[in-house]
Length: 53
Image (cartoon, rainbow, N blue to C red):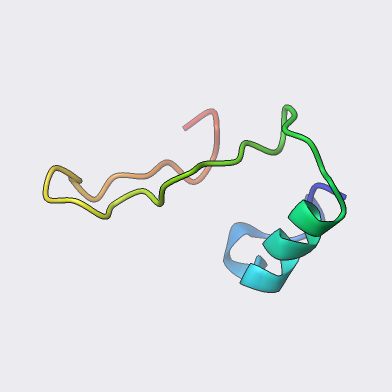
C-alpha cells in the first residue's frame, strides 16, 4: 500500500503510521524522512508536491 489511490491533500497521519506499522519499505513511491521540511529559518517555503516537479 503506497497510498497512490489518495491525493496528497487527502493523506493523513494515520495513513502514514499504517505504512510504518505494516513494515512498508522505502521504494520508488515511499521515501521516509527523519525530519520535517520547513522547520528552520533557512526554509524558503518551497516543497515540491510531485517528485518530478
